[in-house]
Length: 169
Image (cartoon, rainbow, N blue to C red; front, top):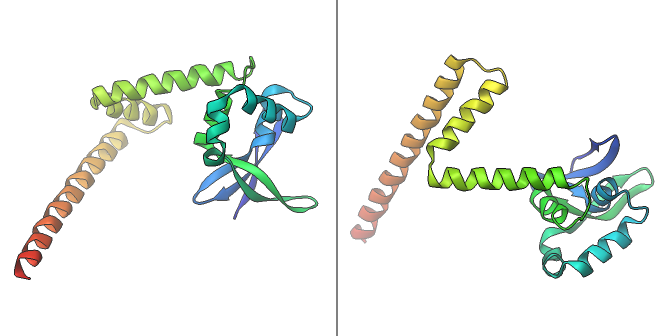
């Protein structure tokens, strides 16, 4: 398990690497986003206000060993998806920009499901914003398309192979 710190608005948020993804200490997130002096009490009140959050808490939050100055401590942690769900239950002006961003990203995802070309267009725009050249972006897009065709062909051949083997028995 790897450990690290994230910094949000100058405040540290402890995180640990668990099951191939980052998990964040829930109390740290609450403390940063609410300026609460007692984040444990805030979490309890938040769960009382939001029945759905409370019912799904065990799926969102896991107790993990987090290294601290005093040694390893068991703390409530959540992955990015769980943190986004928890943020939705925080009535704070600090969370409003995050909530608006989540709504925008959700809307864009629905658009991409309806029109898959939008996803490719957004991908190209992101690569361009990161400073990649047009030539590199086109090669990347072609490489993805070729890989997709190749894996589709492998799947098709695997089905044919399995079908023939099944008939031979």
